Amino acid sequence: MNISETSTVDTPVLLLQDVHKSFGDSHIIRGVNLELLQGERHAIIGPNGAGKSTLFHLISGQFRPSSGQILLQGEPIQGLDARVINRMGLARSFQITNIFPGLSVFENLRFGVMRRFNMQYTFWRRVSGAHKVTQETEELLERLRLTRSRDTLGGELSYSEQRSLEIGMSLASDPQVLLLDEPMAGMSREETEYTVGLIRELSQGRSLMIVEHDMDVVFSLSDRISVLVYGEVIATGTPDEIRNNAKVQEAYLGTEVKA
Image 1: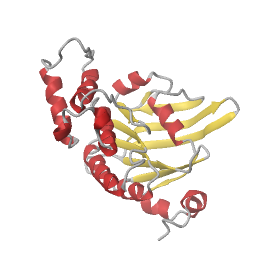
Image 2: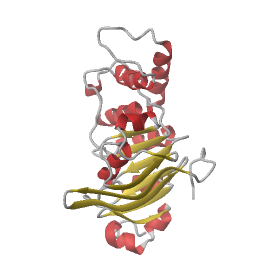
Image 3: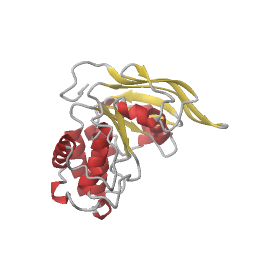
Image 4: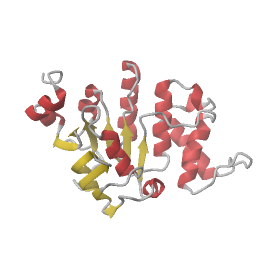
């Protein structure tokens, strides 16, 4: 297994044990067992309706599991408020860009950094005097390659820049675990290549779980891949193992990645 360079032990930082989620009579997640290792980049793939976003909702606190356990660094988090889970070291970006379009890039990122320091954002009180917050925001701007767009309103950025900004807002809390939900959705090939490079850089020293439909991205970026079909994980393995798994090919991958 080619776990990223900063990983030292194959220890699960995130562990799902027999997790179920039902909405009335609809069983969306059916006994998922899954682990994310320290320093690992782990992709979740599967057809539309497989339950991938629901799984992320359960991990990040938007939904409560019907049954089962979710552990973050050995601590149970199922049913906790999303803000509590974030403070415990897990951050998540969404399928739909979730930024403040009327604030500048700098202000968007500063808002995220301020939340980590438990500072309240107010429009009538200047926070520029908070030196540590400003310093960390500037450093994040540079890491995101958005320094030139510092004063640009979030809503005026290109789509790929908006996605980069959202990833940056997730990173502002300095999480140990980062969940990215279809970060490349709607991007051109050039934008995708740029964002993949950014994710590679920003995920160093963290554990990354990503939902993505672009198979080129999945197979080039991931240390391991889990395949979710009708709410069940049917296989987990390295990219080569998943590529050559006959059950996975039949259920999802088809012939496109057989070569």
